[in-house]
Length: 97
View 1 (cartoon, rainbow, N blue to C red):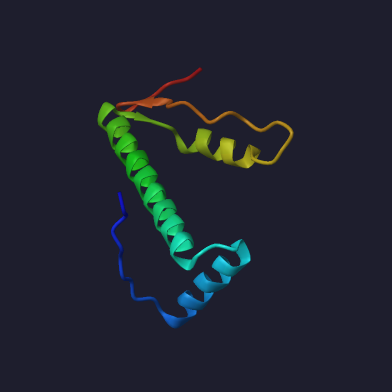
View 2 (view 1 turned 90 degrees about the vertical axis):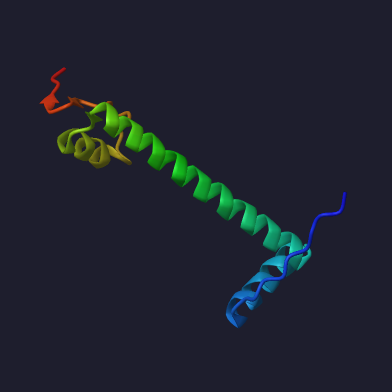
């Protein structure tokens, strides 16, 4: 089944970058553009799903305190990197472990 075509207007600099990428990959411009659009849509869907998950968690009243989040972030790239924190605030009550 043939795929439908799509016409897109691009800024000249974007078109040049697309052409350069296609040449670097030894691919058709249309194939690189299609892959870029698919990647963009996948990323947008992932962001939307993460936002919906965050709203669902907020609706349950489960949150991660700024102390735990900041500790986790400070550990990034260290030898003692922490696992992502679990919610420690349920409703308005901070949980201690």
